Amino acid sequence: MIFKNIQPRTCRAWLSLVSPRQEPCFYSTVPPQPVPPLNQTLQGYLRALEPLLPPDELNHTRRTVQEFGRPGGLGPRLQEGLERRARNTKNWITDWWVQWAYLESRQPLAVHSNPAISLPRRDYNDWRSQLLFASKLIAAVLDFRAKMHNGQLPVEYMRGKPLCMELYPLLFSSCRIPGPKHDFVFHYANSRRPPTHITVVRNYQFFQLEVYNSDGSRMTESQIHSQLHRIRAQSWKTDKEPMGILTSEHRHTWGEAYNRLLRDKLNQESVRMIETGLFSLCLDSPVMRISDEKYASRKAAQILHGGGTYSNSGNRWFDKTLQFVVGEDGSWGLLYEQATAEGPPITNLLHHILEYCEKPDPKRAPLVPLPMPKKLYFHIDRDIKRDIEQAKQNLDILINDLDVHVFNFKKFGKELPKEHNMSPNSFIQVAVQLSYYRVHNEVCPACDIASQRMFRGGRTEYIRSPTNQALKFITAFDDPKISREAKLELLREAVSAYAELTTQALKGHGIDRHLLGLKLQAIEEGLSIPKIFMDTAYGLATHWKLRTGQVPANTDSVMCFGPLVPDGYAVCYNPQADHVHFSITAFNCCEDTNAETMARTIKETLCDLQELLQPTV
Image 1 (cartoon, rainbow, N blue to C red):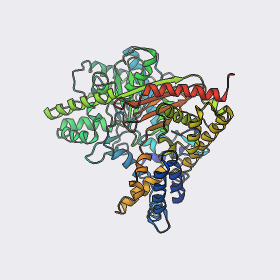
Image 2 (cartoon, rainbow, N blue to C red; image 1 turned 90 degrees about the vertical axis):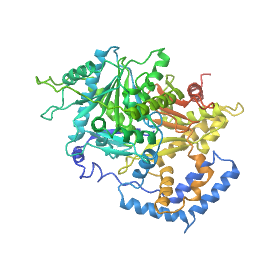
Image 3 (cartoon, rainbow, N blue to C red; image 1 turned 120 degrees about the horizontal axis):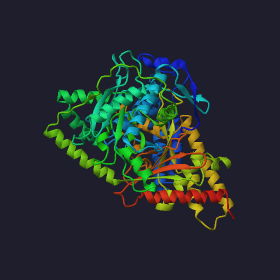
Image 4 (cartoon, rainbow, N blue to C red; image 1 turned 180 degrees about the vertical axis):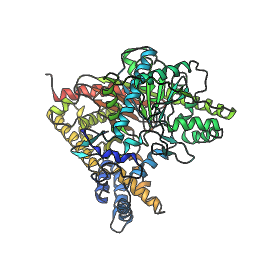
């Protein structure tokens, strides 16, 4: 994911975000997202297909694309519709994208959608320290929220341009709700009586914890700490049904179970409290420690899915936008739901938490009695019990199918490519493509993510690879007949080509959102889906066997998510100055993919590229 060089500056215009009827900050200074020129997108699409298709198939697709784009044809008509939509909406693609990519997807949120961020282990290994750190974390998040509401949150800039900040207030008191054909997202922060509680879950039991005093002031760390002690005392047994497991189901299945669950008034009230809470805190039991080498992978997997129904998976409510996970063994991290949240705002929030945690508790606790945290109860009939048992089975199957491999590459970091005037992200992308080729003897469609927040209401765009230049480098690299100088030049060309694609995407001139918009515009106008999108080439080009992402953070965190397709990988990385954190996931059900093999090959490839740049002989 390309979110580099995001720099904060303070802006008091954030006060406008408190009211839903006022325009969010930077609407006046952040430009609308452009609709790219049609011909530019079609030519870019054909160039992206060149490394992937044999000549005869490419010629067939070229004719289809030319027919679509000809003057007076369907393409220009749909382009006109998109340009009209851009004039009449805040953002011509964002609502469509969120609906199509997230809300209409029927796959489980666990593994398939919600990304997890695993942070460096805290230096403790007991429940008392767990509660101390958890209370600090809650106070830190509330402090961040207060800065947002008071207009003190630094506004981000990227490449000198301000970024749209509208996602921030949506992070709190929001939740995804399952529906029969598509989901919905509800935001409760702007309701008449905004929520003042969070949800805490321990041993599969949910609690409503008020985090503001009656005068509206935030609770202090020591107040929160004493409340967490009370919650722990009320949640000893694990004989409760793990209600949260239901949210890990296929969305249609969960939607039906959700309707059954809400027939009961008690269940309605409990679910409502979880959905409206500012965020959730999951107090997990320890991650089983096998070895230091495997601990990082297991820790990331725990944040991602809870480790299974016999571990901490019952401590999740996967529909919730923000879930902070704090383990008894010092492991901690964050799980977030993508329809509302995305990488950079989450990274910014985590950065604030880390800074806040270094400071002493600023306030003394007032001597006022605190209300007892409210335990949320559920009435479980035979149907709901059956739903839970089915969800447990399905989640354990999914978790056992996912291979997670996390490692820290320590030979070099982002400074090495910088020393050779190469973009670190583009360099790593080419390395990942070469690694895939070495394992599978072919290249594949890969997507990286570029932010579109320099535009009003913008979300993300894909950066496609491989490029023609990358293909030339990849096929030449292991050929002993080709000289080092030639390989070095091919590497520079491949990295430069990817950097140029990145620049185009950051200008709003990527191709994938535009192609999707043209397809959805045809549907909007009641037309048949154009042939360009029924072509086998389009299916191949959007079968993302490599889902990649960079969310650079100033801390040694690692992001983790599942592959987009059954025979694919997800490769996430966090480059630091002298090392790079990686997480690789693949599904065990596919005999062709293996996360450990891909991880080992990426390490070897990076070492080989270092040797190419800095020969030791």
